[in-house]
Image 1 (cartoon, rainbow, N blue to C red):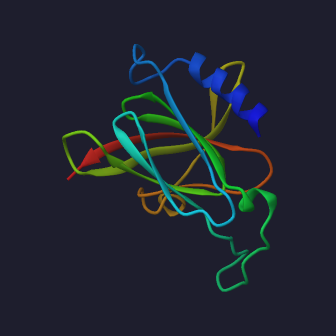
Image 2 (image 1 turned 45 degrees about the horizontal axis):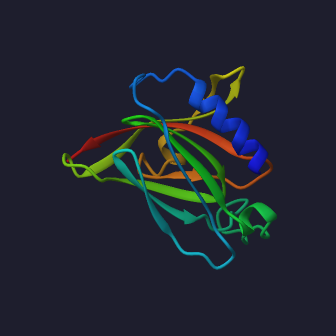
Length: 158
């Protein structure tokens, strides 16, 4: 896990930032034990509300899938590369954002992209639709092999 995050951090910090090229990237991270509760952590102009994700169901009404090493130790790395732009990597976490600066009180997800870094450049994969983001309200870093990476842009509204 740490080697993946170390390589990822280097790629993110060196990549061009679309929103604020002169702003220094900020980072934060979290890891949870088996009986952990949610955490709040400030990152840029926002507070990340991070909770371990529950088990998944193969289909609606099916029993929860068995716990895996990834769901037993949720973890994440969060990097703000601009005032409204973040990269998030990790596994088995739910994230919502709230503003921690004056202005409109609500935060919406403008875009959430799955992707990866190739030679220090972001390569977008799938753009997640509203059904995968709680209609633009929350982000889930799913459990599974390796750390998933998302590029997230947000906006504020009333």
